[in-house]
Image (cartoon, rainbow, N blue to C red; front, top):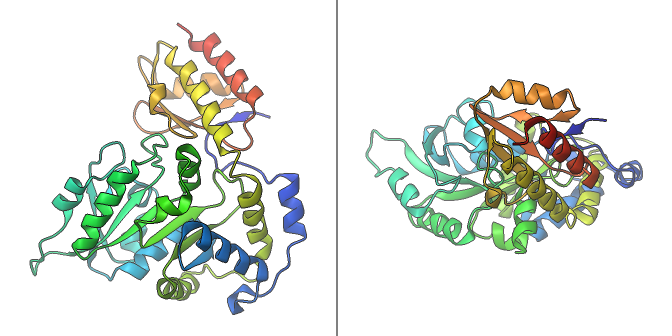
Length: 341
C-alpha cells in the first residue's frame, strides 16, 4: 500500500467502525425516526454547545445550508480569500444561494476585526447588504493553522455588532480542539452556526453536521431536502460518526506529532521551504524551489509516497488515521534519499 498523504479524506473505516455500522439501529430519517442519526445529532450539538444539529452528506452541503439560513439572494458574505467556501465549493454561494462573496486577504487565514470593519458595507441603496461573516478553523490553505481564538472572538463580535451573523467552517475543528486543549464548545462559542466534518480527521467514510439554534436548524432541514440531502436509513452512516467521536478524537494528537516530524524532515531538504513552527495540526504545506512541483510529486510517487499539488510552487501532505509511525519514517527516509542536502 502506498503512503497516501494527499488528504485526510482517503481513510478507510476501521474494523470497529465497520462493525458499528453493521449493527446500527435504523429508521426512516426523513420522518425523523432513525435513532442513530438522532443520537449523533444530539451528541454533536451538545459537544459544540449548540441547541441542535443536522446530519448531512458533505461539508459543502453543511456550509451551503448555513448560507441558505443566514442570507437572502443579493446579500454579501465576507470570507477570507483562501477559504474553502470561496475556493472549493464549486461556486455554490452564487449558484445555490444567489449571494455575492467579499473575499479579503487575511493573515494566514485569519480575518481580524480590522479586515471585517473594512469589508462591511455602509448601507448605501446600490450596494449588496453585508449579511454573514464566515471563518475557517483549522484553515486548510494556511497549512492547517489553528486560528487564535481571541482574534476570532473579536472579529465575530464586531460582525455581530454590525448586524451580521457569523458562521464557522469547522471541517477540522476537531483538530483545533486537539491542538489547543480547549473544549470544542469553546472554539464554537463565537459563532451562530458551525459545520463539522466526520470524514476527515475522524476517519468516518461520509458525513458532516451543521449545528446552531433550533430554529435555524429547522430551516436547514427543509433546505437540505430541497437540494437532495435527505437520506432514509442513514443510521448506518451515522453509526460510523458516533464510533469516530468515541474512538478517534484522542488520537488526533498522534497525527499532529507525525506531521511535525515530516515538517522537520522537509525543512532539511535544500529544495523545500517550510517552517516547522507553522505546522499546528495535521497539514504540512511546503514550497518547492528550483524544480517543478510535478517532478517532486512524480519522484515521490515512484517510491509509493503520494502528496498533492496545492497551488503554484506548493505541495500539501496531510497526516491521518491510516498513516502510521512506520509510514512517516518511510517518507522521511525517502525524502532524505531523494532531496537531502
